[in-house]
Amino acid sequence: MVPEHATPPAWLSPLLRVLGAEPLPQPLDREAHWRLLHLWQAEVVLPRLAQALPEHAPAVVTLQRLHQRASLGLRGRTGEWRAAFGPVLLPTFRRAYDFEGAYAQAYDSALAYGRAPSNQAMIAGQFGDAEAFARHYAQLSTEANAQAFATANAAASSEVAARAYAHADEQACASVVGALARVCSWACATSTDQRMALVTQLAAGLQRLASQFNQHTSGREAWINRD
Image 1 (cartoon, one colour):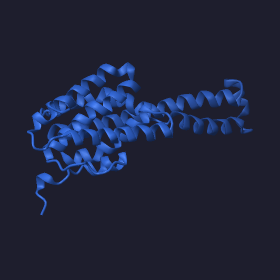
Image 2 (cartoon, one colour):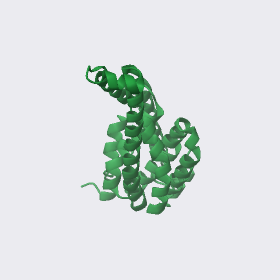
Image 3 (cartoon, one colour):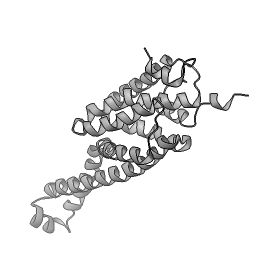
Image 4 (cartoon, one colour):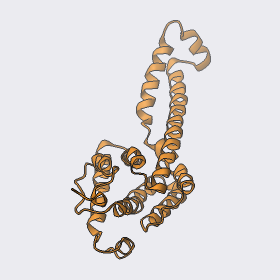
């Protein structure tokens, strides 16, 4: 029977699945897995996000410092994590939203409405033509939907992630860690090929950090004395 401390945490499988990554190169205990996750966020994920969201770099740095502390065993409080996640996840979800796709759909719908014979006079009087109405509607509609998407998802994810990291809650972490990795890839890349390349880099970063971990060294020393 495998000792509980050597069993992978519940959040590892969802994360590896999203990243398309192989199992970690060596077994780690529960605490080491958590420290690895925090270090990966601080050294691999958040630097990428800072590049994609330069106007929000100070907020990203604040979250990065919390992860760095947690990688040394200093978990932080729920309120700290919640306050740090909010200003980062809101623009991340906003950037990850498929604005072009949603805009195109809204535009086509509005254009069909504007060209309907029963609407032409009203549209011409207020917007000039159906194309102008479609552009106006699509922009307003897509902006509102993107903001609603970002606000709702950032609030929910911040709450769950804060609880997961403050209390080392495996189930809470399992419910968000993969989704947040996926959102990061959408926020940091603009094409399918770029997203695939980024996910590959995130997976490689996790494997690299895991391989550097010396399980025979105490947790704190392992992170401080990494190559």
